[in-house]
Amino acid sequence: MKLLITFFTTLCLFSAQAQEPAWMDYDWHVPNENESTIIQILDDYFSKPANIPTGITYNLYKMMFNGSSDVTHTFQVIGTIDDINETSNFTRNADFSLMLEKIRNHMEPRGRYAGRGDVSTGSPNKDNIEYLILDHVENPTKRNAAALELWANTKPNNYRAIGAVISGREDGITHYTLVERANLKELLGSNPTTKEESMAWEKYLKDRGEIKQIKTMTRKLAKSWN
Image 1 (cartoon, rainbow, N blue to C red):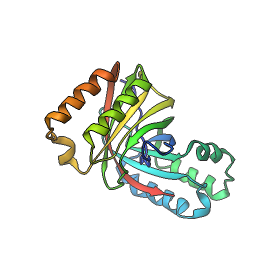
Image 2 (cartoon, one colour; image 1 turned 90 degrees about the horizontal axis):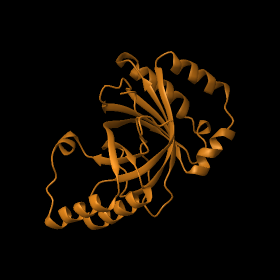
Image 3 (cartoon, rainbow, N blue to C red; image 1 turned 90 degrees about the vertical axis):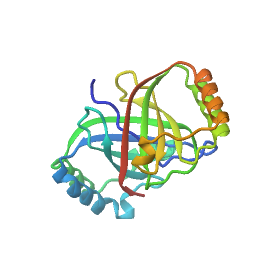
Image 4 (cartoon, one colour; image 1 turned 120 degrees about the vertical axis):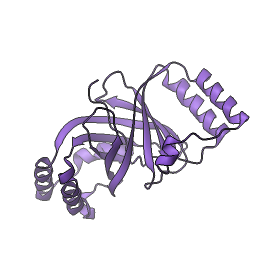
């Protein structure tokens, strides 16, 4: 299977009632010995407020589990659709070109992707790990409505988000689901459910329409700048 998308940011997503974000992801292969150097180069540049466009957050994720892909990190640009659109008009200085030159000497690019969040629940916690499910969704509207009903009935205590991959998608992937987990124990363990929760899940699986799961992965936020 070809290299698949590494997602998404942070994700610095908001509640289902708020405006969901747009994002651009850049997948990298970074040798272990270069990771600290990459973080330092990015920190030297993005720690200066003048180098960050209004409304934009930059995130660097480290992959924990990613199948056979050799993507080790994802660098993400995230904000509202309008703020993302304005990044093309943001004036870059000589330090930006120097930063890119340094970065290229310590990593190999693997892919570029763009998309947006659709619906979410809860508040993101940057200290959590992120479990990502990459799907092909036949009817996004039906799926989103079913997910919102599921969350309303089960009231999950962690952040969850659903969004679309718009450009750069591979192997039939159209959407992603992000579920935060506090640690590996929570990721690998099974959560007990009540009868009501089981019924809510059964209804969701019935109402969501046709979905084909393509891949799962897990990542951790290494550094964020905004």
